[in-house]
Length: 198
Image (tube, rainbow, N blue to C red; front, side):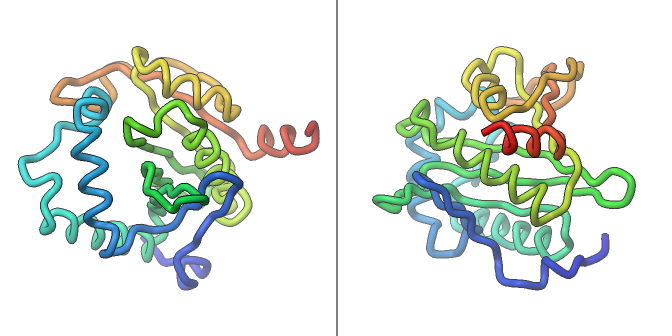
């Protein structure tokens, strides 16, 4: 994949009323590992199976390297979500599989620490990343896949304006099992319509 001009700038930071999003840095390791460890039982049903070294520093360094390489290539932008007030890490959200040319699309994935779930942080983060995708990245379409049983995720996607487009059979291997997913999407024109209404 080729590098795109806007990826040569500094890593983006997105600011909302209650959350601030920025790319992960090495100094985030302890807070990230602690939040993920405390939320493990809450997160595992909705994520790929955790490797044995998931929370170790070596795996963290590899993760950061991947984030930076993907960003430099223009294929993804990973963000951590922080409270604007106390500055606590609450979760993460990634715009990945970015395609340009005729597709102009990307896929969103996210996670939130159990203690911060259901408080509106992810909804605001999703809206910020959607605006970033359309306004800065100039994408036309963003997608998110969601296990049908994940009612919380379905609710946040629908509140953010994503529309369900269908069922992807045996789509992703989650927690060791190939699982069906609903496909949700948001189109740049949908986002524009929301802004002109409000």
